Amino acid sequence: MKSIRQYLLVGFFSTLLLASFVSFLISYLSTTEEINELHDAQLVENARFIGGFLNQKINKINLQHISEALLQVNNNRFQSGTEYNADGHAYERKLAIQVWDKHGKLLLNTPSAPNYALSPLTKGFFQQKTGKHIWFIYTHQIPANQYWLMVAERSDIREEMLNNILLSMLSGTIIAVILMVILISSFIKKGLSPLTKLSRAMQERDLDYLQPVKLNEQPPNELKPVLDALNHLLTRLDEGLERERRFLADAAHELRTPLTVLKLQLQVAQNAPDIQKMQQGIDKALIGVNRSAHTVEQLLTLARLEPNKYALEREQIELVGFTQEVIAGLFPLASEKEQSLALNQSHQNIVLEGNRLLLTILLRNLIENAIKYSPQHTDINVMLMLLNQQVQIHIADTGCGVPEADIPRLMQRFYRHQDTADSRGTGLGLSIVQKILELHDGQISIKNRAQGGLIVEITLPVTSFNKQDT
Image (cartoon, rainbow, N blue to C red):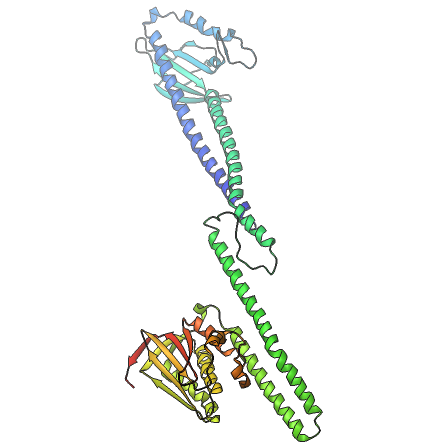
């Protein structure tokens, strides 16, 4: 289907033609039947009228006088294009009357009637073909003298009337179809105008302009789903492009300085006067490479997070065992700083529904931050608690804490507090955590501990749990 307008026009026009043809055929059959019944009734009426005059004894009927009156038909002349005048009608030559006696002798006939009997001497309706035409005959016997009266008319009378009626009907039908096609075409054009406006609005847009499409007038109900789907697609496309632009900007922002430093450190190592200084330069370069690799990993994680939380692959996760696995994976980091890493829970078998990989990244980032920002020989506590069908994960460290005014800024990308700048972080960990929580309908809050350090509190909805006091 190349064109909706063409398809609708062809469909409507074909339907109109089919409906008009069926209507015309029904009208033709019905009109033919009605005309035949009407003219048959006229034949019967004429036969009764004429029979009333002839219903006398034989000696009282002046057949000669009647025959002379009927012969007057031949004397009537009509101008060209006329069918009647004051003296008669042209149809008189298409009508015939015959009177036969009971022995089969022709007693009386009109000039238009043949000299042979138009029908058998039997009462009823008959048809007989004579030349190019068919005669419709009604035969009636006169009681007083037993004469047979035949009243007939030629078929072209009925045909002419039928043709005139059908021509009038056909002309009206053709005019109606033409008017309907014109009106339907204009209605279709007007009905499809919102599509034309939408197409024009899309063609006139710049490639970088991905804001929702808005028409000047209220779109029809049939177009609203299309417009909503298009705007949704544009929004998702804009979000995708924005994520790509943000990723490129983040990568350029975060990698520019480390790469410059890495270059300088390698140059220092290259120009070092002895092996010891060369090794120091290489070690610093390796530290820079590791930091850059970690930055790239964090950037990729942040860029790949699915923006639609309903499209995430989810599974049932038993939170206590899951948290123990994450802590076990980070235990070597805590051991390097001789830190204590403990897990406490108020319930067993806490089950929530979520994406295992993203929740692993969430817990790992938070616990890793606590390890990084806490001094040696300190305690880091992870606590799982249930409150109103929600699980709260508390991660408490004993670091230097953050000024209250700076806590809201911790969620900003690349933000690192000056007191923790030497920890070689990327400033992306909490941004990733916040994004993962948005996808899981969770919340985060950060506050300073009275005895020093931070408490990060995560709230997530749970599916089920079994209460067990610890």
